[in-house]
Image 1 (tube, rainbow, N blue to C red):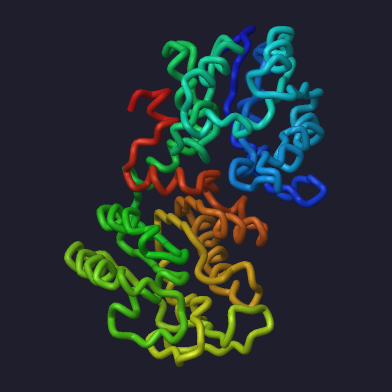
Image 2: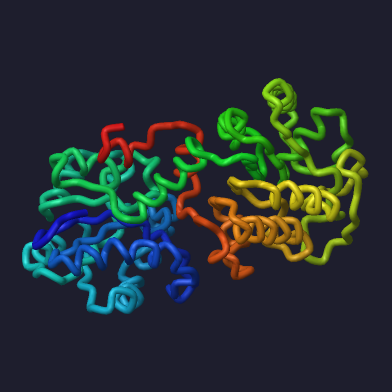
Length: 399
Protein backbone atom coordinates (compact mmCIF):
# COMPACT_ATOMS: atom_id res chain seq x y z
CA UNK A 1 0.00 0.00 0.00
CA UNK A 2 3.03 2.33 0.27
CA UNK A 3 2.78 3.49 -3.31
CA UNK A 4 3.08 7.09 -4.51
CA UNK A 5 2.80 8.66 -7.96
CA UNK A 6 1.99 5.34 -9.63
CA UNK A 7 -0.87 3.90 -11.63
CA UNK A 8 -2.39 1.35 -9.28
CA UNK A 9 -4.81 -1.38 -10.37
CA UNK A 10 -7.18 -2.19 -7.51
CA UNK A 11 -9.50 -5.22 -7.42
CA UNK A 12 -12.50 -4.37 -5.26
CA UNK A 13 -15.78 -6.16 -4.58
CA UNK A 14 -18.46 -3.86 -5.95
CA UNK A 15 -20.92 -6.72 -6.40
CA UNK A 16 -23.74 -4.64 -4.91
CA UNK A 17 -27.49 -5.22 -5.25
CA UNK A 18 -29.33 -3.02 -7.77
CA UNK A 19 -33.07 -2.51 -8.15
CA UNK A 20 -34.91 -2.63 -11.49
CA UNK A 21 -33.98 0.99 -12.17
CA UNK A 22 -30.28 0.22 -11.54
CA UNK A 23 -30.21 2.07 -8.21
CA UNK A 24 -27.89 0.67 -5.52
CA UNK A 25 -29.95 -0.76 -2.63
CA UNK A 26 -27.01 -1.53 -0.31
CA UNK A 27 -23.63 0.18 -0.73
CA UNK A 28 -21.85 -1.62 2.15
CA UNK A 29 -19.26 -3.20 -0.13
CA UNK A 30 -18.51 0.07 -1.87
CA UNK A 31 -18.06 1.95 1.40
CA UNK A 32 -15.77 -0.83 2.65
CA UNK A 33 -13.32 -0.15 -0.21
CA UNK A 34 -13.22 3.64 0.22
CA UNK A 35 -10.36 3.82 2.80
CA UNK A 36 -7.98 1.97 0.46
CA UNK A 37 -8.97 4.05 -2.56
CA UNK A 38 -8.68 7.35 -0.67
CA UNK A 39 -5.28 6.47 0.79
CA UNK A 40 -3.94 5.70 -2.68
CA UNK A 41 -5.38 8.93 -4.10
CA UNK A 42 -4.04 10.99 -1.20
CA UNK A 43 -0.58 9.61 -2.00
CA UNK A 44 -0.74 11.00 -5.53
CA UNK A 45 -1.52 7.75 -7.32
CA UNK A 46 -3.84 7.30 -10.27
CA UNK A 47 -6.31 4.54 -9.43
CA UNK A 48 -7.77 2.00 -11.85
CA UNK A 49 -10.63 0.06 -10.26
CA UNK A 50 -11.92 -3.32 -11.42
CA UNK A 51 -14.76 -5.47 -10.09
CA UNK A 52 -17.41 -7.94 -11.15
CA UNK A 53 -21.13 -7.35 -10.74
CA UNK A 54 -23.66 -10.19 -10.65
CA UNK A 55 -23.53 -13.26 -12.86
CA UNK A 56 -23.91 -11.97 -16.41
CA UNK A 57 -22.65 -15.29 -17.79
CA UNK A 58 -25.61 -17.15 -16.29
CA UNK A 59 -28.47 -14.67 -16.71
CA UNK A 60 -28.55 -14.34 -20.49
CA UNK A 61 -30.87 -12.44 -22.78
CA UNK A 62 -33.25 -14.42 -25.05
CA UNK A 63 -30.70 -14.27 -27.89
CA UNK A 64 -28.08 -15.86 -25.63
CA UNK A 65 -26.00 -12.72 -25.17
CA UNK A 66 -25.03 -11.20 -21.83
CA UNK A 67 -27.36 -8.60 -20.35
CA UNK A 68 -24.71 -5.89 -20.36
CA UNK A 69 -27.12 -3.10 -19.49
CA UNK A 70 -28.32 -4.84 -16.31
CA UNK A 71 -24.84 -5.75 -15.09
CA UNK A 72 -22.86 -2.69 -16.19
CA UNK A 73 -20.66 -0.98 -13.61
CA UNK A 74 -21.67 2.29 -15.29
CA UNK A 75 -24.58 2.36 -12.81
CA UNK A 76 -22.13 2.72 -9.91
CA UNK A 77 -20.28 5.77 -11.23
CA UNK A 78 -22.44 8.55 -9.67
CA UNK A 79 -22.38 7.03 -6.19
CA UNK A 80 -18.69 6.11 -6.37
CA UNK A 81 -17.90 9.71 -7.37
CA UNK A 82 -19.87 10.88 -4.33
CA UNK A 83 -18.07 8.46 -1.98
CA UNK A 84 -14.62 9.47 -3.24
CA UNK A 85 -15.41 13.18 -3.54
CA UNK A 86 -14.12 13.39 -7.10
CA UNK A 87 -15.28 12.48 -10.62
CA UNK A 88 -14.88 8.88 -11.73
CA UNK A 89 -14.00 8.15 -15.35
CA UNK A 90 -15.70 5.07 -16.81
CA UNK A 91 -14.22 2.67 -19.38
CA UNK A 92 -16.71 1.01 -21.72
CA UNK A 93 -14.66 -2.21 -21.64
CA UNK A 94 -12.30 -4.02 -19.26
CA UNK A 95 -9.15 -4.41 -21.36
CA UNK A 96 -10.32 -3.17 -24.76
CA UNK A 97 -9.36 -0.01 -26.65
CA UNK A 98 -11.37 2.34 -24.40
CA UNK A 99 -9.85 0.98 -21.17
CA UNK A 100 -6.34 1.00 -22.66
CA UNK A 101 -6.58 4.61 -23.84
CA UNK A 102 -8.18 5.94 -20.65
CA UNK A 103 -5.65 4.11 -18.46
CA UNK A 104 -2.80 5.49 -20.53
CA UNK A 105 -4.11 9.06 -20.17
CA UNK A 106 -4.97 8.79 -16.46
CA UNK A 107 -3.32 11.48 -14.32
CA UNK A 108 -2.32 11.39 -10.61
CA UNK A 109 -5.38 11.78 -8.40
CA UNK A 110 -7.76 10.53 -11.07
CA UNK A 111 -9.97 7.44 -10.88
CA UNK A 112 -10.88 5.07 -13.69
CA UNK A 113 -13.55 2.38 -13.26
CA UNK A 114 -13.30 -0.51 -15.72
CA UNK A 115 -16.39 -2.30 -17.04
CA UNK A 116 -17.54 -5.54 -15.37
CA UNK A 117 -14.69 -8.07 -15.40
CA UNK A 118 -17.21 -10.89 -15.94
CA UNK A 119 -18.15 -9.51 -19.34
CA UNK A 120 -14.90 -11.27 -20.35
CA UNK A 121 -15.27 -15.04 -20.75
CA UNK A 122 -11.68 -15.47 -19.52
CA UNK A 123 -12.32 -13.92 -16.10
CA UNK A 124 -13.80 -16.96 -14.36
CA UNK A 125 -11.46 -19.30 -16.25
CA UNK A 126 -8.42 -17.52 -14.82
CA UNK A 127 -7.24 -16.70 -18.35
CA UNK A 128 -3.61 -15.57 -18.37
CA UNK A 129 -3.99 -13.40 -21.48
CA UNK A 130 -6.77 -11.42 -19.80
CA UNK A 131 -4.74 -11.13 -16.59
CA UNK A 132 -1.69 -9.95 -18.52
CA UNK A 133 -3.77 -7.32 -20.33
CA UNK A 134 -5.15 -6.07 -17.00
CA UNK A 135 -1.66 -5.92 -15.51
CA UNK A 136 -0.43 -3.87 -18.48
CA UNK A 137 -2.72 -1.01 -17.40
CA UNK A 138 -0.80 -0.21 -14.21
CA UNK A 139 2.48 -0.15 -12.29
CA UNK A 140 1.20 -1.91 -9.16
CA UNK A 141 -1.67 -4.18 -8.10
CA UNK A 142 -3.75 -4.21 -4.92
CA UNK A 143 -6.34 -6.83 -4.03
CA UNK A 144 -8.97 -5.43 -1.68
CA UNK A 145 -11.75 -7.87 -2.64
CA UNK A 146 -11.94 -10.38 0.20
CA UNK A 147 -15.40 -11.47 -0.96
CA UNK A 148 -13.86 -12.98 -4.11
CA UNK A 149 -10.54 -14.13 -2.65
CA UNK A 150 -11.64 -17.77 -2.85
CA UNK A 151 -11.89 -17.55 -6.64
CA UNK A 152 -8.85 -18.13 -8.87
CA UNK A 153 -10.13 -15.63 -11.41
CA UNK A 154 -8.05 -13.54 -13.79
CA UNK A 155 -8.65 -10.28 -11.89
CA UNK A 156 -8.36 -11.70 -8.35
CA UNK A 157 -5.41 -14.09 -8.45
CA UNK A 158 -3.81 -14.60 -11.86
CA UNK A 159 -3.15 -10.88 -12.46
CA UNK A 160 -0.84 -10.85 -9.41
CA UNK A 161 1.62 -13.09 -11.30
CA UNK A 162 2.55 -10.13 -13.48
CA UNK A 163 3.75 -7.93 -10.59
CA UNK A 164 6.82 -8.56 -8.42
CA UNK A 165 6.48 -8.72 -4.63
CA UNK A 166 7.25 -5.00 -4.26
CA UNK A 167 4.44 -4.04 -6.61
CA UNK A 168 1.52 -6.06 -5.25
CA UNK A 169 -0.21 -5.82 -1.89
CA UNK A 170 -3.42 -6.27 0.08
CA UNK A 171 -5.73 -3.31 0.50
CA UNK A 172 -6.78 -2.06 3.93
CA UNK A 173 -10.05 -4.03 3.88
CA UNK A 174 -8.34 -7.29 2.93
CA UNK A 175 -5.78 -6.75 5.71
CA UNK A 176 -8.61 -6.27 8.23
CA UNK A 177 -10.54 -9.31 6.99
CA UNK A 178 -7.50 -11.57 7.33
CA UNK A 179 -6.49 -10.18 10.74
CA UNK A 180 -9.99 -10.55 12.19
CA UNK A 181 -10.50 -14.07 10.83
CA UNK A 182 -7.10 -15.04 12.26
CA UNK A 183 -8.17 -13.64 15.62
CA UNK A 184 -11.03 -16.16 15.62
CA UNK A 185 -8.91 -19.10 14.46
CA UNK A 186 -5.61 -18.48 16.23
CA UNK A 187 -6.19 -16.12 19.15
CA UNK A 188 -9.71 -16.80 20.43
CA UNK A 189 -10.28 -15.74 24.04
CA UNK A 190 -12.42 -18.25 25.91
CA UNK A 191 -15.23 -19.05 26.26
CA UNK A 192 -15.47 -19.01 22.45
CA UNK A 193 -18.88 -19.46 20.84
CA UNK A 194 -19.80 -20.12 17.21
CA UNK A 195 -23.38 -19.55 16.05
CA UNK A 196 -23.95 -21.43 12.81
CA UNK A 197 -27.15 -21.30 10.78
CA UNK A 198 -28.27 -21.88 7.23
CA UNK A 199 -30.06 -24.57 5.30
CA UNK A 200 -27.66 -27.49 4.93
CA UNK A 201 -25.25 -29.39 7.16
CA UNK A 202 -23.36 -30.31 3.97
CA UNK A 203 -22.60 -26.61 3.30
CA UNK A 204 -21.09 -26.13 6.77
CA UNK A 205 -19.56 -29.53 7.54
CA UNK A 206 -15.95 -28.44 7.09
CA UNK A 207 -16.52 -25.31 9.15
CA UNK A 208 -18.15 -27.30 11.94
CA UNK A 209 -15.26 -29.80 11.94
CA UNK A 210 -12.77 -26.93 12.26
CA UNK A 211 -14.77 -25.20 14.99
CA UNK A 212 -14.50 -28.30 17.17
CA UNK A 213 -10.80 -27.46 17.53
CA UNK A 214 -11.24 -24.07 19.17
CA UNK A 215 -14.88 -23.39 20.11
CA UNK A 216 -16.31 -24.08 23.56
CA UNK A 217 -19.89 -23.73 22.35
CA UNK A 218 -21.47 -24.29 18.93
CA UNK A 219 -25.08 -23.10 18.62
CA UNK A 220 -26.94 -24.55 15.64
CA UNK A 221 -29.90 -22.84 13.96
CA UNK A 222 -31.63 -22.68 10.61
CA UNK A 223 -32.89 -25.67 8.65
CA UNK A 224 -29.61 -27.53 9.21
CA UNK A 225 -30.69 -28.05 12.85
CA UNK A 226 -33.46 -30.41 11.71
CA UNK A 227 -31.02 -32.81 10.06
CA UNK A 228 -29.31 -33.14 13.46
CA UNK A 229 -32.67 -33.53 15.21
CA UNK A 230 -33.80 -36.18 12.68
CA UNK A 231 -30.50 -38.01 13.23
CA UNK A 232 -31.25 -38.10 16.98
CA UNK A 233 -34.66 -39.68 16.36
CA UNK A 234 -36.79 -36.51 16.48
CA UNK A 235 -39.94 -35.92 14.45
CA UNK A 236 -39.37 -32.94 12.16
CA UNK A 237 -42.60 -32.84 10.12
CA UNK A 238 -42.06 -31.24 6.73
CA UNK A 239 -38.93 -29.35 7.82
CA UNK A 240 -36.12 -29.12 5.31
CA UNK A 241 -33.65 -31.92 6.04
CA UNK A 242 -30.84 -33.86 4.36
CA UNK A 243 -31.76 -37.48 5.16
CA UNK A 244 -28.50 -38.73 3.66
CA UNK A 245 -26.48 -36.55 6.07
CA UNK A 246 -27.88 -37.93 9.34
CA UNK A 247 -24.83 -40.14 9.96
CA UNK A 248 -22.61 -37.14 9.33
CA UNK A 249 -24.62 -35.22 11.92
CA UNK A 250 -24.29 -38.03 14.46
CA UNK A 251 -20.54 -38.20 13.85
CA UNK A 252 -20.25 -34.46 14.50
CA UNK A 253 -22.24 -34.78 17.73
CA UNK A 254 -19.94 -37.63 18.84
CA UNK A 255 -16.79 -35.64 18.03
CA UNK A 256 -18.14 -32.65 19.92
CA UNK A 257 -18.76 -34.83 22.97
CA UNK A 258 -15.27 -36.33 22.75
CA UNK A 259 -13.71 -32.85 22.56
CA UNK A 260 -15.95 -31.52 25.34
CA UNK A 261 -17.54 -28.97 23.00
CA UNK A 262 -21.09 -27.92 23.88
CA UNK A 263 -22.87 -28.38 20.52
CA UNK A 264 -26.46 -27.24 21.05
CA UNK A 265 -29.58 -27.77 19.00
CA UNK A 266 -32.71 -25.61 19.44
CA UNK A 267 -35.10 -27.17 22.00
CA UNK A 268 -38.09 -25.37 20.51
CA UNK A 269 -39.04 -24.00 17.09
CA UNK A 270 -41.45 -21.60 15.48
CA UNK A 271 -43.38 -23.88 13.12
CA UNK A 272 -45.85 -23.07 10.35
CA UNK A 273 -48.23 -24.86 7.99
CA UNK A 274 -46.55 -23.16 5.01
CA UNK A 275 -43.45 -21.16 4.18
CA UNK A 276 -45.44 -17.98 3.86
CA UNK A 277 -45.77 -14.61 5.54
CA UNK A 278 -49.44 -15.26 6.31
CA UNK A 279 -49.07 -18.91 7.41
CA UNK A 280 -50.48 -20.21 10.69
CA UNK A 281 -47.60 -20.33 13.22
CA UNK A 282 -47.08 -22.14 16.52
CA UNK A 283 -44.23 -22.77 18.93
CA UNK A 284 -43.36 -26.48 19.09
CA UNK A 285 -40.88 -28.85 20.69
CA UNK A 286 -38.20 -29.16 17.98
CA UNK A 287 -38.19 -32.94 18.40
CA UNK A 288 -41.96 -33.28 17.96
CA UNK A 289 -43.02 -31.25 14.90
CA UNK A 290 -46.31 -32.58 13.46
CA UNK A 291 -46.60 -33.85 9.89
CA UNK A 292 -47.50 -31.07 7.47
CA UNK A 293 -45.69 -28.43 9.56
CA UNK A 294 -42.32 -26.78 8.89
CA UNK A 295 -39.70 -25.71 11.42
CA UNK A 296 -38.86 -22.18 10.23
CA UNK A 297 -37.12 -20.44 13.16
CA UNK A 298 -35.70 -21.17 16.58
CA UNK A 299 -38.28 -20.70 19.32
CA UNK A 300 -38.24 -18.36 22.36
CA UNK A 301 -36.69 -20.95 24.70
CA UNK A 302 -33.89 -21.57 22.18
CA UNK A 303 -33.32 -17.84 21.72
CA UNK A 304 -33.05 -17.35 25.48
CA UNK A 305 -30.74 -20.35 25.94
CA UNK A 306 -28.49 -19.33 23.06
CA UNK A 307 -28.50 -15.69 24.20
CA UNK A 308 -27.35 -16.72 27.68
CA UNK A 309 -24.35 -18.59 26.24
CA UNK A 310 -23.50 -15.71 23.89
CA UNK A 311 -23.57 -13.10 26.65
CA UNK A 312 -21.02 -15.09 28.69
CA UNK A 313 -18.63 -15.49 25.74
CA UNK A 314 -15.35 -13.68 25.10
CA UNK A 315 -15.11 -14.60 21.39
CA UNK A 316 -18.11 -14.93 19.06
CA UNK A 317 -18.38 -16.05 15.45
CA UNK A 318 -21.78 -15.83 13.76
CA UNK A 319 -22.45 -17.22 10.30
CA UNK A 320 -25.95 -17.90 9.01
CA UNK A 321 -29.53 -17.08 10.05
CA UNK A 322 -31.58 -18.94 12.66
CA UNK A 323 -34.60 -19.26 10.37
CA UNK A 324 -36.33 -17.97 7.25
CA UNK A 325 -35.20 -14.49 8.22
CA UNK A 326 -36.57 -12.72 5.15
CA UNK A 327 -40.18 -13.47 6.25
CA UNK A 328 -41.18 -11.43 9.37
CA UNK A 329 -42.93 -14.28 11.26
CA UNK A 330 -39.66 -16.24 11.19
CA UNK A 331 -37.12 -13.47 11.83
CA UNK A 332 -37.38 -13.35 15.63
CA UNK A 333 -34.65 -15.90 16.37
CA UNK A 334 -32.10 -14.21 14.10
CA UNK A 335 -32.91 -10.80 15.60
CA UNK A 336 -32.57 -12.15 19.15
CA UNK A 337 -29.13 -13.56 18.29
CA UNK A 338 -28.08 -10.23 16.74
CA UNK A 339 -29.05 -8.37 19.91
CA UNK A 340 -27.25 -10.89 22.15
CA UNK A 341 -24.06 -10.68 20.07
CA UNK A 342 -24.18 -6.86 20.19
CA UNK A 343 -24.71 -6.89 23.96
CA UNK A 344 -21.82 -9.30 24.53
CA UNK A 345 -19.60 -7.10 22.34
CA UNK A 346 -20.52 -4.00 24.32
CA UNK A 347 -19.37 -5.89 27.44
CA UNK A 348 -15.95 -6.67 25.96
CA UNK A 349 -16.34 -9.74 23.75
CA UNK A 350 -14.76 -9.88 20.28
CA UNK A 351 -17.41 -10.64 17.65
CA UNK A 352 -17.14 -11.43 13.96
CA UNK A 353 -20.30 -11.64 11.84
CA UNK A 354 -20.17 -12.94 8.28
CA UNK A 355 -22.67 -14.31 5.76
CA UNK A 356 -25.45 -12.47 3.99
CA UNK A 357 -28.45 -12.96 6.27
CA UNK A 358 -26.61 -12.56 9.56
CA UNK A 359 -25.01 -9.35 8.25
CA UNK A 360 -28.44 -8.20 7.00
CA UNK A 361 -29.92 -8.77 10.47
CA UNK A 362 -27.19 -6.74 12.13
CA UNK A 363 -27.63 -3.93 9.60
CA UNK A 364 -31.43 -3.89 9.77
CA UNK A 365 -31.35 -3.58 13.54
CA UNK A 366 -28.75 -0.81 13.36
CA UNK A 367 -26.31 -2.94 15.35
CA UNK A 368 -23.34 -3.06 12.93
CA UNK A 369 -21.56 -0.47 15.09
CA UNK A 370 -21.95 -2.77 18.09
CA UNK A 371 -20.16 -5.68 16.39
CA UNK A 372 -16.36 -5.90 16.47
CA UNK A 373 -16.09 -6.79 12.79
CA UNK A 374 -18.69 -7.35 10.07
CA UNK A 375 -17.09 -9.33 7.25
CA UNK A 376 -17.73 -8.57 3.59
CA UNK A 377 -16.93 -12.17 2.67
CA UNK A 378 -19.52 -14.94 2.51
CA UNK A 379 -18.02 -17.99 0.83
CA UNK A 380 -14.50 -16.57 1.17
CA UNK A 381 -14.84 -16.18 4.93
CA UNK A 382 -16.19 -19.73 5.27
CA UNK A 383 -13.32 -21.20 3.27
CA UNK A 384 -10.73 -19.18 5.18
CA UNK A 385 -12.15 -20.30 8.53
CA UNK A 386 -12.20 -23.87 7.26
CA UNK A 387 -8.44 -23.60 6.78
CA UNK A 388 -8.41 -23.51 2.99
CA UNK A 389 -5.81 -21.54 1.04
CA UNK A 390 -7.59 -18.75 -0.83
CA UNK A 391 -6.14 -18.07 -4.31
CA UNK A 392 -6.54 -14.28 -3.96
CA UNK A 393 -4.53 -14.32 -0.73
CA UNK A 394 -1.88 -16.80 -1.84
CA UNK A 395 -1.26 -14.74 -5.00
CA UNK A 396 -0.11 -11.80 -2.87
CA UNK A 397 1.38 -13.36 0.26
CA UNK A 398 2.54 -16.69 -1.17
CA UNK A 399 0.84 -18.50 1.74
